[in-house]
Amino acid sequence: MNTNSSLRYGLLFILLSASQGHASTNIWTGNGDSNNSGLWSSTANWDTGVPGASDTAILPEVTGNGNDGVAARTVTNDAGATVRELIMVQTNSSYPNQIVLDADLSVGRIYVTPDTDTGINACRINVNGRNLTIGLFDLKSRVGGGRGIPYCSGSGTISSRSGPTKSASRTIRPSRSPAPTALTTDTL
Image (cartoon, rainbow, N blue to C red):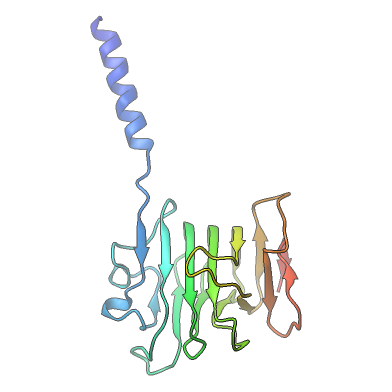
């Protein structure tokens, strides 16, 4: 093998290695208490740092009042974010698990396990005039096996990137709406 071939293979190996993203799972810790509200962009609120485009972000169950004394945790997406997966878990309706968009959010797939026994909307997304782009909204979550429909509020645009694979499992319940709505591209 000549020197030029070795250099080309070495360069190709380096380029391929650099292009491989390292996906991680990032769990909301709320700067020491996962019940705490806070900013999505703050490294201190995540166990392994702010989630990136190839990562899974998990917002675990809220079990009590956080630092603000409110019986709900609000994660504010303040700087715009893109993640591969977002998992929201809330089987106890006493403490809602919610996201407020102060910037656009793009998610490859959202897994939601909201409380279904009491009819309370335990998982909430406030679009807040921003854009929420979703590849797939999975209400049959792999986390705990629950089913339910997340509560979406605020004005803004929710759009789906998955094109022709629309199904009944991808529905949302907009605020002030008595029934679920199929998720395509819509403005709340």
